[in-house]
Image (tube, rainbow, N blue to C red):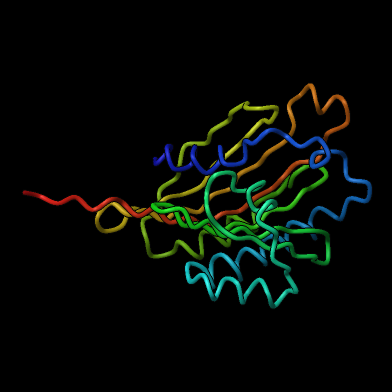
Length: 204
C-alpha cells in the first residue's frame, strides 16, 4: 500500500552519491550498539516529539545537536524545504532532518554504518508499539538503482480521515556494486516518520 509515498521518501536519498560518504568506515562502531542508539534517538525525537517542530528541535538539542548550514540541509533534502541537525552520539554521527514540504511533513534520523543492521527486530518492536490500536498496513518493499546508489525502502502506512496518511519508513542506501567494489562499502540507515496531508477538494 501507498507505494507512491514510500517511493518519494526513498528517492529523496537519491542525489548523486558522494564518494566520501560511502567509503568504508575507518573505525566502525559495534553494530548492535549503533542500531540501538539510532532506534532510541528516533523514538525520542521523531515518534514522541514530532510532529511538533519546536518540540522536535528541543529533543534534538537535548543531545547537543548542532544546526546544519543551509548547504548541508540541501545535501540531504535536495529541493525540499526543511532544517536539520548533526548529533554526535555514543556510537558515531547521526543526522536529524525535519522536512517541511507540504503536503509532506517528516522527521528522520540517519547514520552511516559499516554494513547495515543484521537484525531490525528491535526497530519492528518499537514500530509495533507505536502503531498499536490503529490499522497500519504494510507498504510493498521497493528496491531501486539510481544515480550510483542502490535504494531499499519498506514500512507501514495508516490512512486517516480525508485521506491523510501517517507512515513509518525504513530507507537504506548503499553505493552501487561497481562503487562498492572500489571500497565504498558503508551503508546509510534511515528511520523516518512522515505525514502526508491530502489536498482538500471543494464540491460545487
